[in-house]
Image (tube, rainbow, N blue to C red; front, side, top):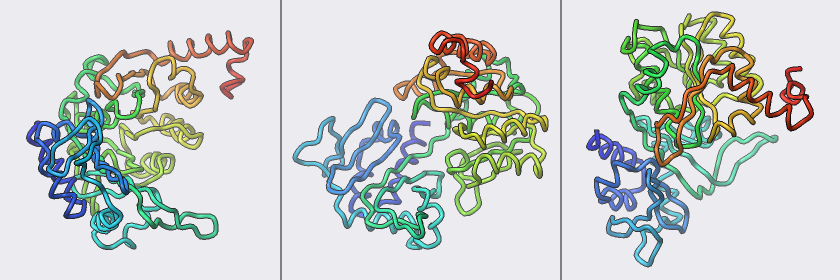
Length: 339
């Protein structure tokens, strides 16, 4: 697995300009295996974000905990060349992705792009003067969902909401849940639809999912989650719908409709702790739909994929109301907009 992660690093680095690419491929394999992101910022040292922290790349492919005098600096020309390489020298064909700030690469890697927005009639139509790129290295970890599936006794039919901070492993676990459900690894084979609005779950490239989501998964790539959930219910007859990072009111309504159609929903939400989770209005709104029987809280980015606890949704909902009642004079349901 570690060798595979090192190869994935080299695959992702292949999207960068030749000068930067040659150096970062010399980074020690032990660092490559732990790298989650590879970042270029104009006139700043090239950095790698690992599970243990942020490191800076030297001109000879070494790494340093602090930027020094021998750093590999990303220049304006490097950013421009990398941007064209990332877009396969066809920026126009990637305009829809660029407007949303990212491009998906072969292998499922996802490149975040920042720069100056190009607007027309109040709408973002493109981007120019690229100032940084962030290559998120796609990692598949078969078995990443084993702990949570075991905690739920191999029964996910009541719905599951994963809560965790950024880089805590939510997407990796969701991907593995899709694989296990649709391949019958954790029971009978299930029909799964993955609504992949930002391309992080399936890593679809040229219409082909780059990540293994099992043999009975359908992918709605690039669909806004609310629309994708409803389309899945209308046309794909899924038993499970899996998507990442729910929270808007439209998405909450779509979840309710999916539940009414007899579909089990598995998704995630940002929350770094149980306290943060029960204070979030979006979290309470999702629990109010009744679509999520269980909530799993993940540890932080230093221990990605680690489950801190699994809770019954009803218990968390009751606790959220109890705490808010204490804070706002017994008006918790009005505070959460469900009165």
